[in-house]
Image (cartoon, rainbow, N blue to C red):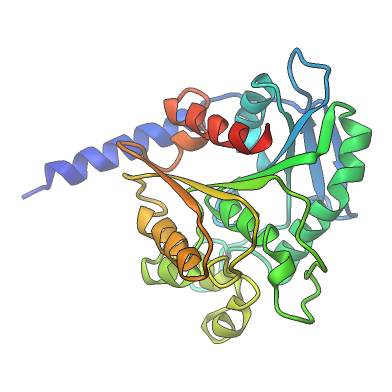
Length: 294
């Protein structure tokens, strides 16, 4: 007999997904390249109605690190933040190839090491690029946010100073961030693999099962702790794409490492309302960002 609760959850998830992808793409005020590849670009959104120096919010999109999902679905969210008075940088990066993997499965998620190369390069280039594209942006007040797979990358980017010695992405000191707001992040890779989040995307990102254990030490936010960077996680309790237990596992790992990470669980909220300007959850996200930025 069908489970009414499960049916309702699937219907809610479908409606939330339809809503977030129903918004028209919002063109940026400026675009700058941080590399030669077509995906190595950052779109900039100026704060609406505010010409004073304002915090800079850096946005990393999700989509399971797969090529089909690029930064365009985050442009309404970027515009939403700009209308809240922030300067916004919407970062693109190389994802998995567009072709399906052998055996007829979905396209491969991510590229090792290119996906990480790009996020590191974008963050390193951002202060200078923002200064040229958005004079109002105050890079000294930068908050990093990301959704889903982008939430993973945001947490990773904030932890580059604790990467293993010899890592090409390691920073000698903490990145100059006011904080990180991770939205339904794939924040604990082991827990995400256990739950088969995004259909095997995590193993694909790191190059397969044989490479997972070694590369996880340089890629898993739940390992790269403590960071000393103020961190907040916002998560929908009814998220069917990245279950809230993934975020809870990361928060628990941080606690064991002696670091407090804020976790906001939103009732009756799934995966996409966090970045949907039409949803109340998006206003909660903006407030979490404001608390760190201002």
